[in-house]
Length: 204
Image (tube, rainbow, N blue to C red; front, side, top):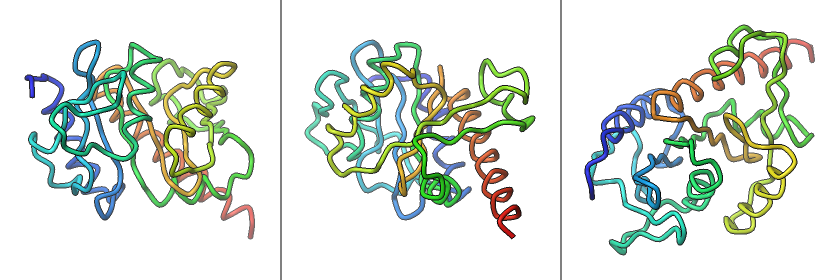
């Protein structure tokens, strides 16, 4: 594995995510870009709260394969798709929090629209609570290649920004580096909690 200055920051983020309970029971996967043609991604089946540098595998962006022969996360294709289509992406975080999982099922449309929250400004480029933040929702699938193609097709007319939800599965978000991806994750999780609580109160 080559040295990656962002790997230490990603390890710290993974431990923080584990403490938050956002990736229970070895769920989720995290990665960081490694040059133009590779990324470092969590090995399948690892507890995210106790990862070490040795638990990250070098993966080719084009093939999604690890030259070491070890097994990367099952959702590696989602990460490599983001790095390939959005060259500015430097880190990707995929989590399984209760709020993101439940909201992705409660919201029946193809997107979760967030509006009116001051914390929208935690997302890069957002300057006012008056704008809408649209988080696409895609139906979950065990066929990651087919899922990737659906996401790519959707992004052709609605470019991805900040993150997307997989229905009943969780959140995938990203940033230019680990710090931005972590901020987007924390901001979106706060917004999801607010939105879910709002819906629960309005339903009474």
